[in-house]
Image (cartoon, rainbow, N blue to C red; front, side):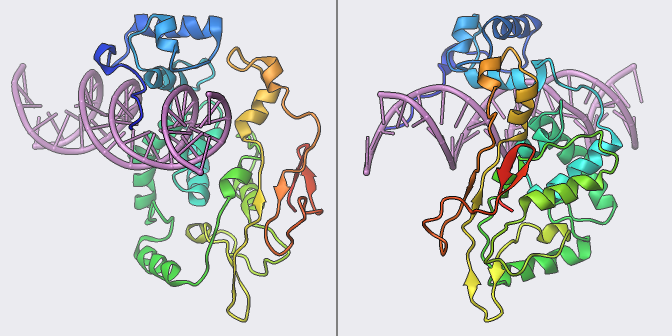
Length: 273
DNA sequence: AATAAACACAACCGCTCGAAT
DNA sequence: AATTCGAGCGGTTGTGTTTAT
């Protein structure tokens, strides 16, 4: 029993969008907001797949998109974020107002990869090219086990390109993403970026500790939405969390404790300290 | 001027995840 | 608990444009 297709392929257009199709989509979303993408094409009079409509809107028609070339500052931010997050394009895009995941992904593949290679860096590991292979092999051989929930916590702190020092982005991210626990006795060294994804704990006895602590934060876009309601996200829906809520859960040796009891507040939200 | 190669990017595809039933 | 559905994500492909020969 398979899943039904997302749309009737026989009656849908493919390929480049026409101006008329764009206009229909924009008009529909302006008057109805972003809703059910599956039913949108029919309602808007478009012979397109809902997924296609969503992509077109998000990547091209959205009014808050920043068109034009990436700045040097954006380049460096993308590189820094990629070194910490890997190919999490949507998370990276969340840190770059007006840029889409697709745009950043394409830009990465066509420009930044080459830029890093020309700097003698491996675009995947961000390590010097001649040592990348060795480092990867070493990392594979380690006993450490990492259950890395960084994506959930990373989104908690909005970054602004207006910040004066781009390096703050990484230090802020590192601060937000490092696994924290009273059982954690070791941390990876700060910014050897390729090693950053490893955040496990190994006691001196050789015993491997698995940190199952989970820290949850609201995504950056959601926080932006609080300040800037849009047609797509009406005010009622964006008046998200007025009250600070502890989103920190711990599992394991401190079981039975729902809150870590050590939360600190950041930007109105509690986070695991 | 014609053609091939390289590049850039929009769009598609397949998959996963969470919510609803 | 199992199934279905809608949304979103990341990888890949297709196509138009630019550059080199």
